[in-house]
Image 1 (cartoon, one colour):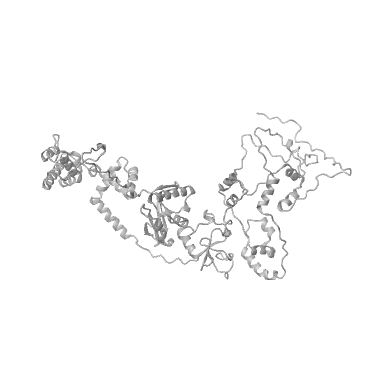
Image 2 (image 1 turned 180 degrees about the horizontal axis):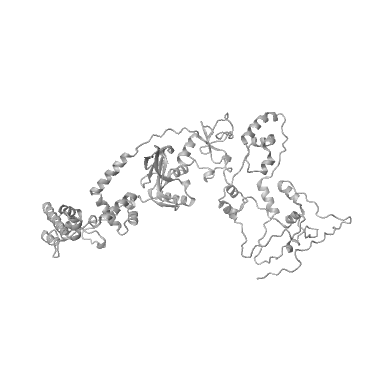
Length: 632
């Protein structure tokens, strides 16, 4: 929270900085954050942590942004602390504190980038000075003397402190006289006391002490250097070099960007160097202008709100699961008994909360729900967060999406497994309970399954059906329903059988000639042991069923493998295509509605008493008897 403001209508708004969690950024940026975390652990030599501690530590990491928003103060649910991660910090300490977060990277929600924050404290062994060994007596120094520091002052000089102070007074007087002779300086400092104050700053004193050092602390030679033959030496600092308009621009930029001198130089003062801006800032802090602005900011901060009272949030939680005795369908009631907490796997809790997709019926206990609301994750890794559960736990495969479940199949190759995992389309599984299956049979007049199947978009009042089923269920228990058990083969056996019956069709080599008229292909097809018929399966002539050819400039659409459906692909053979032509339209629709029943094929042509085939019907005239001419 940056500040609290009171609006005109009396409401309180909070100006807040937006921080993002790991689940709010893309997977590529998450991998970048993981590599940054590994580098930090290696450099700072963190103590070892368990997998659960690493999992929970990701919930404590946030990403700072430059995005600000104004929210009503009634949206505040609690307080937390967010600190910049320091190299001397121990990551395990953040797990010991409640409502404590850290950040080390800055996220840009517009550019979708993740960069390191500029605030870096250079602490550690790699930032320390390397002290060379002491030279022995008579040993020569082989280092490059030009790269060494130059001595600018000797504290063991022959001059006394009084002589040095007297020389500094003379240097200030010379600086004041030089400003009086300079035209530009006399315009900026028209009065004598302003010129004397400018000559008394550090730039004049540094020049005087440097003059003593260069002249071997000889006062006579140093005096002659201060006033050469051309006139007195004038030394100016950044406060004198900057104009009043440039100083106003700097104050405006400082109000907008703070101490971000790179942005100040780029947007407000591009003709100034970065060193000049930094020097002017520290000199500007010694002026009365800085003190006045500091007082104004303090008075403005006093006028703003310091604290605000927020009442306790008492509205009912829509995810709260009411007890069994409550009305069905209200606040997640109707969950199956025996389900454990999705995070800590406990089966006892004073209160349960629905979590995750509604069809999966996952729930959390009270403590795990508070952890989820605070830190945006679960205490332990689960399938829904991309971590594989052990095989001994129940419902381990039910949390996987269909591409992930098929990738674990032993009949899936590595290439197809990679394609399945690369899909980004979310799938779901509808798992019916025993009560739902009973209500379908007991309440057929209320449900009307045939009507509901024809109108899947129309909503069904599930609460009314459950209530009606609970009334009819005791009466129906006296006369049990006749349910014939079905023996269904496992999926692995079905996949093996399909792979044996329908082998993959080899790819057609390039350069094969495609016939111009589709009648040439359609007329040559027929059932085994029967003559080819020029009519289609529904009795219509083939010429009427032909589609117009696409224009020559259009491209044929190709199916993207990532958009293809996930289940088993059925490859049509010559026999299956001939079988489709032998069936009527009514038989095809009946077979499509009941794909689990075997198909009974009737003979296509009647047989004569002698056993020979009946003569075929007279051929239908072709759509055109003239040859087809293609013009370029």
